[in-house]
Image 1 (cartoon, rainbow, N blue to C red):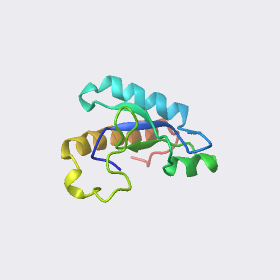
Image 2 (spheres, rainbow, N blue to C red):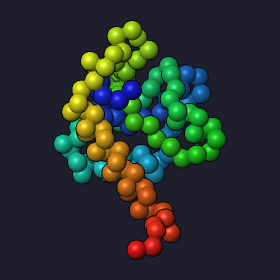
Image 3 (tube, one colour):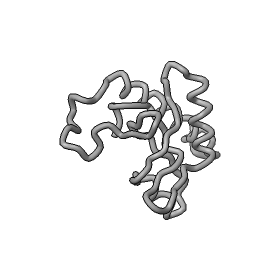
Length: 118
């Protein structure tokens, strides 16, 4: 669900029970978004559905989901017949890649002793 809209990070999702992204990861996404306005990234919520974030939360794994949501939480073409490759926007994909890659780099840098010897 990347490439049609966004980049957006999910702050909350759920059908009955709400699941929330890890607050530290949300804060990092907010900071990266502020530092890189060219990405046009924003927070969003999934109403009436779940992503893999719900699975992570249920098992106590800190997580965040990047999803092709519009600012109002709509997922264009999600689970529809029109969900085809031609709807993907390469520019949105590139911005999402840049943001997610930087988020991973920042998270990795915060983990002590997670580097191989030089």
